[in-house]
Length: 232
Image (cartoon, rainbow, N blue to C red; front, side, top):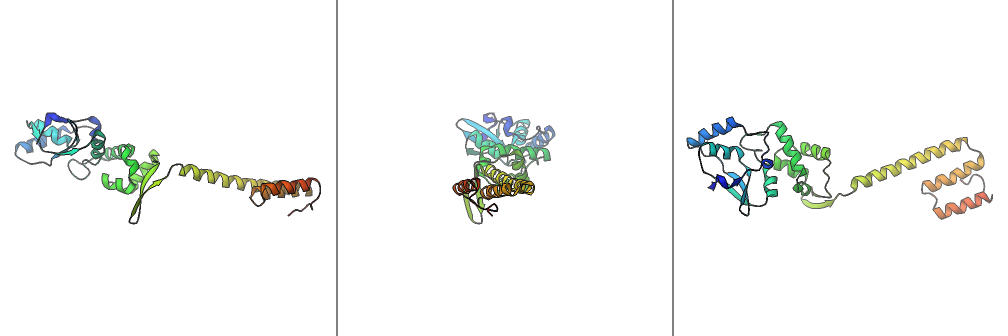
Protein backbone atom coordinates (compact mmCIF):
# COMPACT_ATOMS: atom_id res chain seq x y z
CA UNK A 1 0.00 0.00 0.00
CA UNK A 2 1.34 3.42 -0.97
CA UNK A 3 0.11 6.80 0.24
CA UNK A 4 -1.63 8.62 -2.60
CA UNK A 5 -0.01 11.90 -1.55
CA UNK A 6 3.40 10.36 -2.34
CA UNK A 7 2.45 9.60 -5.94
CA UNK A 8 3.48 12.09 -8.65
CA UNK A 9 0.98 12.33 -11.50
CA UNK A 10 2.75 14.05 -14.38
CA UNK A 11 0.51 15.06 -17.29
CA UNK A 12 2.97 13.71 -19.86
CA UNK A 13 2.58 10.21 -18.37
CA UNK A 14 -1.20 10.30 -18.84
CA UNK A 15 -2.13 9.62 -22.45
CA UNK A 16 -5.84 10.25 -22.25
CA UNK A 17 -7.36 13.32 -23.80
CA UNK A 18 -8.84 13.87 -20.33
CA UNK A 19 -9.74 12.00 -17.14
CA UNK A 20 -13.28 10.60 -17.52
CA UNK A 21 -15.06 11.82 -14.39
CA UNK A 22 -17.94 9.37 -14.90
CA UNK A 23 -15.53 6.44 -14.88
CA UNK A 24 -13.87 7.83 -11.75
CA UNK A 25 -17.23 8.05 -9.95
CA UNK A 26 -18.30 4.57 -11.04
CA UNK A 27 -15.03 3.02 -9.91
CA UNK A 28 -15.12 4.95 -6.64
CA UNK A 29 -18.56 3.50 -5.92
CA UNK A 30 -17.23 0.00 -6.61
CA UNK A 31 -14.26 0.61 -4.31
CA UNK A 32 -16.61 1.66 -1.50
CA UNK A 33 -18.40 -1.65 -1.98
CA UNK A 34 -15.15 -3.54 -1.54
CA UNK A 35 -14.27 -4.27 -5.18
CA UNK A 36 -10.54 -4.86 -5.57
CA UNK A 37 -8.83 -3.22 -8.54
CA UNK A 38 -5.41 -4.16 -9.97
CA UNK A 39 -2.53 -2.25 -8.37
CA UNK A 40 -1.33 0.92 -10.07
CA UNK A 41 2.24 1.06 -11.37
CA UNK A 42 4.74 3.58 -10.04
CA UNK A 43 8.46 4.06 -10.67
CA UNK A 44 10.57 4.98 -7.66
CA UNK A 45 13.25 7.52 -8.49
CA UNK A 46 14.80 8.34 -5.13
CA UNK A 47 11.99 9.84 -3.03
CA UNK A 48 9.73 10.34 -6.06
CA UNK A 49 7.08 7.85 -7.17
CA UNK A 50 6.12 8.47 -10.82
CA UNK A 51 2.70 7.06 -11.76
CA UNK A 52 2.87 5.31 -15.15
CA UNK A 53 -0.32 3.24 -15.09
CA UNK A 54 -3.46 3.88 -13.07
CA UNK A 55 -4.53 7.52 -13.30
CA UNK A 56 -8.25 6.67 -13.24
CA UNK A 57 -7.82 4.18 -10.38
CA UNK A 58 -5.86 6.69 -8.32
CA UNK A 59 -8.48 9.39 -8.92
CA UNK A 60 -11.22 6.91 -8.01
CA UNK A 61 -9.45 5.96 -4.78
CA UNK A 62 -9.33 9.65 -3.84
CA UNK A 63 -13.00 10.02 -4.73
CA UNK A 64 -13.75 7.05 -2.48
CA UNK A 65 -11.96 8.79 0.39
CA UNK A 66 -8.96 6.47 0.52
CA UNK A 67 -5.54 7.69 1.64
CA UNK A 68 -3.61 4.72 0.24
CA UNK A 69 -3.72 2.56 -2.88
CA UNK A 70 -2.23 -0.77 -3.83
CA UNK A 71 0.80 -0.15 -6.04
CA UNK A 72 3.45 -2.13 -7.88
CA UNK A 73 6.66 -0.23 -7.21
CA UNK A 74 9.48 -0.47 -9.75
CA UNK A 75 12.92 1.10 -9.54
CA UNK A 76 13.58 3.54 -12.38
CA UNK A 77 13.73 7.08 -13.66
CA UNK A 78 11.13 9.38 -15.13
CA UNK A 79 12.22 8.16 -18.60
CA UNK A 80 11.47 4.58 -17.52
CA UNK A 81 8.06 5.64 -16.29
CA UNK A 82 7.47 7.48 -19.56
CA UNK A 83 8.26 4.41 -21.66
CA UNK A 84 6.10 2.17 -19.45
CA UNK A 85 3.20 4.61 -19.65
CA UNK A 86 2.84 3.98 -23.38
CA UNK A 87 1.76 0.39 -22.71
CA UNK A 88 -0.84 1.43 -20.10
CA UNK A 89 -4.41 0.36 -20.88
CA UNK A 90 -3.33 -1.61 -23.93
CA UNK A 91 -4.77 -4.83 -22.46
CA UNK A 92 -6.77 -3.72 -19.38
CA UNK A 93 -8.79 -0.92 -17.85
CA UNK A 94 -10.48 1.81 -19.84
CA UNK A 95 -9.38 1.15 -23.41
CA UNK A 96 -7.74 3.89 -25.44
CA UNK A 97 -9.59 5.62 -28.25
CA UNK A 98 -8.22 5.51 -31.79
CA UNK A 99 -6.82 9.04 -31.58
CA UNK A 100 -5.27 8.29 -28.19
CA UNK A 101 -3.65 5.15 -29.60
CA UNK A 102 -2.19 7.10 -32.51
CA UNK A 103 -0.79 9.71 -30.12
CA UNK A 104 0.74 6.97 -27.96
CA UNK A 105 2.44 5.34 -30.97
CA UNK A 106 3.91 8.66 -32.13
CA UNK A 107 5.10 9.60 -28.65
CA UNK A 108 6.64 6.15 -28.14
CA UNK A 109 8.53 6.39 -31.42
CA UNK A 110 10.00 9.71 -30.27
CA UNK A 111 11.24 8.16 -27.04
CA UNK A 112 14.98 7.25 -27.00
CA UNK A 113 14.08 3.61 -26.29
CA UNK A 114 12.42 3.33 -29.71
CA UNK A 115 15.83 3.52 -31.38
CA UNK A 116 16.85 0.28 -29.70
CA UNK A 117 13.84 -1.79 -30.66
CA UNK A 118 12.42 -3.24 -33.87
CA UNK A 119 8.93 -2.49 -35.14
CA UNK A 120 7.85 -6.01 -34.13
CA UNK A 121 8.97 -5.49 -30.53
CA UNK A 122 7.27 -2.08 -30.27
CA UNK A 123 4.04 -3.43 -31.79
CA UNK A 124 3.90 -6.18 -29.13
CA UNK A 125 4.76 -3.69 -26.39
CA UNK A 126 1.98 -1.31 -27.43
CA UNK A 127 -0.42 -4.08 -28.51
CA UNK A 128 -0.93 -2.59 -31.98
CA UNK A 129 -0.33 -4.03 -35.49
CA UNK A 130 3.29 -4.05 -36.66
CA UNK A 131 2.24 -2.43 -39.93
CA UNK A 132 0.87 0.53 -37.97
CA UNK A 133 4.16 1.02 -36.14
CA UNK A 134 6.08 0.69 -39.42
CA UNK A 135 3.82 3.30 -41.06
CA UNK A 136 4.25 5.86 -38.29
CA UNK A 137 8.00 5.29 -37.95
CA UNK A 138 8.37 5.96 -41.65
CA UNK A 139 6.02 8.95 -41.54
CA UNK A 140 7.83 10.54 -38.64
CA UNK A 141 11.20 9.82 -40.26
CA UNK A 142 12.51 8.37 -37.02
CA UNK A 143 15.44 6.44 -38.49
CA UNK A 144 17.92 5.74 -35.73
CA UNK A 145 21.62 5.28 -36.41
CA UNK A 146 21.47 1.90 -34.69
CA UNK A 147 18.52 -0.46 -34.84
CA UNK A 148 17.98 -3.84 -33.18
CA UNK A 149 17.31 -6.33 -35.97
CA UNK A 150 16.10 -9.92 -35.63
CA UNK A 151 16.76 -12.47 -38.37
CA UNK A 152 15.48 -15.91 -37.47
CA UNK A 153 16.91 -16.74 -34.06
CA UNK A 154 19.67 -14.11 -34.26
CA UNK A 155 19.33 -10.58 -32.88
CA UNK A 156 21.99 -7.97 -33.56
CA UNK A 157 22.63 -4.21 -33.77
CA UNK A 158 22.69 -2.80 -37.32
CA UNK A 159 24.19 0.57 -38.18
CA UNK A 160 21.80 2.14 -40.68
CA UNK A 161 23.30 5.62 -40.68
CA UNK A 162 23.44 7.17 -44.14
CA UNK A 163 21.97 4.06 -45.81
CA UNK A 164 19.29 6.16 -47.44
CA UNK A 165 21.83 8.77 -48.52
CA UNK A 166 24.15 6.14 -50.02
CA UNK A 167 21.27 4.52 -51.87
CA UNK A 168 20.10 7.89 -53.18
CA UNK A 169 23.63 8.74 -54.31
CA UNK A 170 23.97 5.46 -56.19
CA UNK A 171 20.64 6.01 -57.91
CA UNK A 172 21.65 9.53 -58.96
CA UNK A 173 24.98 8.23 -60.29
CA UNK A 174 23.24 5.52 -62.30
CA UNK A 175 20.72 8.01 -63.64
CA UNK A 176 23.49 10.42 -64.65
CA UNK A 177 25.32 7.70 -66.57
CA UNK A 178 22.14 6.80 -68.41
CA UNK A 179 21.54 10.45 -69.27
CA UNK A 180 25.13 10.77 -70.52
CA UNK A 181 24.84 7.71 -72.76
CA UNK A 182 21.57 9.02 -74.19
CA UNK A 183 22.96 12.48 -74.85
CA UNK A 184 26.15 11.14 -76.45
CA UNK A 185 24.03 8.96 -78.72
CA UNK A 186 22.00 12.00 -79.81
CA UNK A 187 25.15 14.04 -80.45
CA UNK A 188 26.74 11.22 -82.44
CA UNK A 189 23.72 11.10 -84.76
CA UNK A 190 24.33 14.76 -85.76
CA UNK A 191 28.14 14.76 -85.80
CA UNK A 192 30.73 14.36 -88.55
CA UNK A 193 32.92 11.27 -88.70
CA UNK A 194 35.87 12.78 -86.73
CA UNK A 195 33.56 14.11 -84.01
CA UNK A 196 31.77 10.75 -83.83
CA UNK A 197 35.15 9.14 -83.15
CA UNK A 198 35.86 11.68 -80.42
CA UNK A 199 32.46 11.04 -78.85
CA UNK A 200 33.15 7.32 -78.91
CA UNK A 201 36.28 7.88 -76.82
CA UNK A 202 34.37 10.02 -74.32
CA UNK A 203 31.54 7.49 -74.10
CA UNK A 204 33.94 4.61 -73.38
CA UNK A 205 35.53 6.65 -70.58
CA UNK A 206 32.17 7.71 -69.06
CA UNK A 207 31.00 4.08 -68.99
CA UNK A 208 34.19 2.95 -67.30
CA UNK A 209 35.38 0.99 -70.32
CA UNK A 210 38.48 3.18 -70.79
CA UNK A 211 40.82 4.10 -67.91
CA UNK A 212 41.56 7.86 -67.55
CA UNK A 213 45.24 7.48 -68.52
CA UNK A 214 44.36 5.40 -71.57
CA UNK A 215 41.62 7.88 -72.48
CA UNK A 216 44.15 10.75 -72.54
CA UNK A 217 46.52 8.66 -74.64
CA UNK A 218 43.85 7.86 -77.21
CA UNK A 219 42.69 11.49 -77.34
CA UNK A 220 46.27 12.66 -77.95
CA UNK A 221 46.63 10.19 -80.80
CA UNK A 222 43.27 11.24 -82.20
CA UNK A 223 44.21 14.93 -82.16
CA UNK A 224 47.43 14.16 -84.01
CA UNK A 225 45.58 11.90 -86.50
CA UNK A 226 47.54 8.85 -85.44
CA UNK A 227 44.50 6.59 -85.03
CA UNK A 228 41.73 5.60 -87.44
CA UNK A 229 38.59 7.70 -87.29
CA UNK A 230 36.38 4.78 -86.12
CA UNK A 231 38.49 3.98 -82.97
CA UNK A 232 35.78 1.61 -82.13
